[in-house]
Image 1: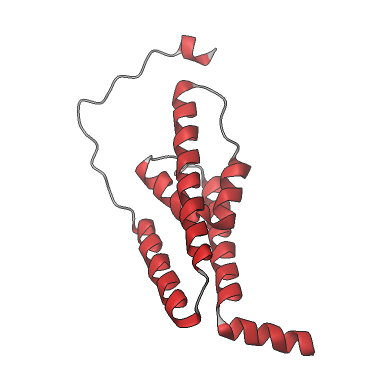
Image 2: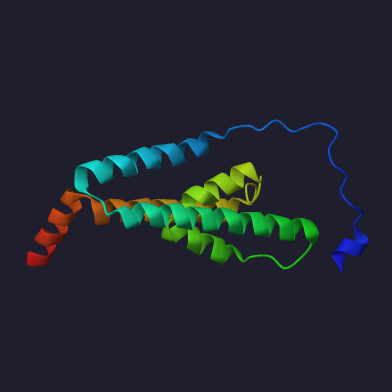
Length: 142
């Protein structure tokens, strides 16, 4: 319907410069933090593989949603994108947002996205650190 009303997009005669957002530095920071946790606290390898797989899937979802937006087709729901970020795909979502320039303007979406990141990283810390395990054991006995 909408594609008949819009003229086709012309490619830009100028290549846009790929600006690296400071937010992207969170991905290698988290990777270093994960590696440190893996070395110090023996975080199971499947946890890292899950982050990698979920990030790849989430990045692919962002790419599919961006293509659907451009073609005026049915989109992937924001709740689905947030769910994948929440369960561990946030590094891929962050890369997708910056690389594809997708979902970077809508303030409400960005706000919820950062909440999913905070919840996921907090859960990672609570599940993986010995201090959190000791605190949980203490809490269960009192």
